[in-house]
Each structure stands twice: as C-alpha cells, then as structure tokens.
Image (cartoon, rainbow, N blue to C red; front, side, top):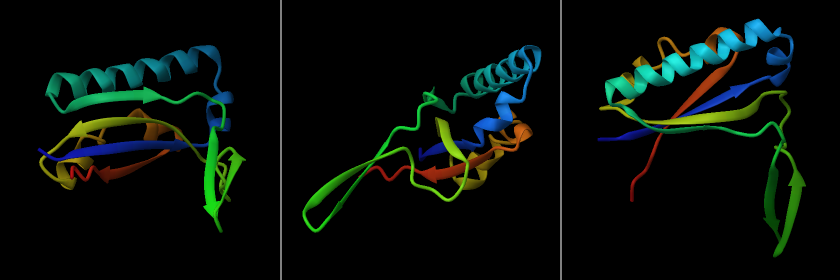
Length: 116
C-alpha cells in the first residue's frame, strides 16, 4: 500500500500566543488524532521536530555551504511529520479531516513516498 508523508508547517508564533491551558488542550487534540490514526491502522510513525531551525546544506561549483535554518521567505517552519499508509491521495487527504494542525492556521503538505 502506498505511504504518504504528512508534513506539518506552521508559524511558531501562533503557538506562543497560547496560554498553558490552551496549549495543553492543543496537545491533547494532537494525541487524540494520532490515536485515531493508530486505531485505523494507517499510522506508521511520527515525530515533532525541535524548535531550533536546523541547517540547510547547499553545493555549488564544488563547494559545500551550510546555512543556519531553512532559507525561506515565509515565517512558516516544518514542525513535524506523520507517515501513514493509504490507498491513494484521496484516502490520505481524508485522514486529515480532523487534523488539529489545521485549527491553528497550520498547513499540511501531503507527499507520496516513492519506494524504489
């Protein structure tokens, strides 16, 4: 069965505006959503990425360059991912119907894994 990577992008400032109770409620929604994916059998794995921006490695003219953080014109960052199995894109998108990430202004990029 095809696998899909659900890449969760968001503006971290949205979450810093939440109070402790709101943050706890949001975390609980993510956990409930993950539990639903597990119970339905589509879940493979997931991880939240750390809040530090990471590094970008580029190569040009035989020289490698390391840049701090993602080089982007937007304030959105990749905050984590879920790997699921689904029959096709439509089924993968259906699994996002109750994704709490969308409630907080986040976006989810859905990409099929190319198993070679």
